[in-house]
Image 1 (cartoon, rainbow, N blue to C red):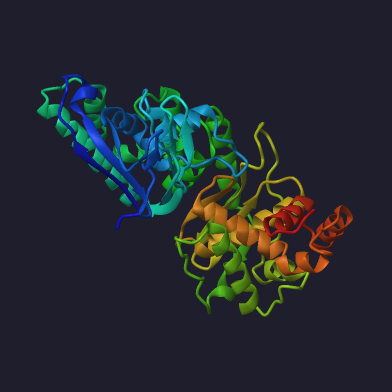
Image 2: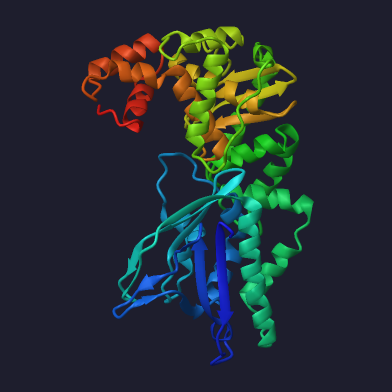
Length: 426
């Protein structure tokens, strides 16, 4: 079975409008769980009977953000505009739908459903589900659903709908145009409505940054702050050219652990940090463990190569990494050494996992790669074994947090988050 499925069967047409022509019985599943099942005042129902047109139209209208836009940070809330681009609720048009969200997490897409009650329709969708799926699998499901609705419209001799025009535009996109569309989608905007100055900036940055770093930038930026963040990113990538050379050669005798995309990204990051320590003969209770790794790989968190010339949130873009063979060039952008220390650890993970001659940004975006490198850095610079050893009766006091942060040369916020994420009260 597919991890995500939208099955539909057509019902007799009661009229000739877009909605009438596409009246259908819909059944939506995520990881074999029927998230379209609902309870009304009388009984449990196993499918929806609604016009398929509105859902297909919404999918086409938001096609590129649906598949390419992640959350910009772990702390970001789902604002109304983001929800309109990613939740089925934006396609209801008076017909109750389950709260299915489709959100990119980089190389994969998370499809989830939350329980909800529609007071207006007096129904309750009670099933919850979540799956991290290959983008191509999600795209195939959406594409098949939209194309089925388009064919149904044509059979009803309807040829001038918004859906048909939008889908024709998407379907005719060639590979050169697709890069532009993905970048716009990652920013959360339609590529067909993007302003000319942003389009021109895309073209220039594709040359100066390369497609990979440009996509990293779009995944963390919004359309409003994109020009300012682009300046920071260009400076960061430029600064890697004269940055001290770090080495990955001590890691050449063993292979980086493989990622299991069905497991949480943070687990992969933590597991990789633990594996690296063991391979280098460093105990997880050694408070100088991260320093020893930095020294082994010639990574210097004390070295700040960036002077702030623009007004930007330094948590959004914290560094850049370029890998050539077993060498790395790292630019760390943050002002304090404790923050650069965390970013340096992130850079090690990113450089180790990179392809040869690949460049990347370190950002706050909620993509699988960025989540994993943050978790790697958290475990490397603030080992859970040490945090637990300092906790008394499952609690870490404020003074203990400060003392441990000083001992590990890391921010108190990192210690606090490591504790709370692992069930230790602070």
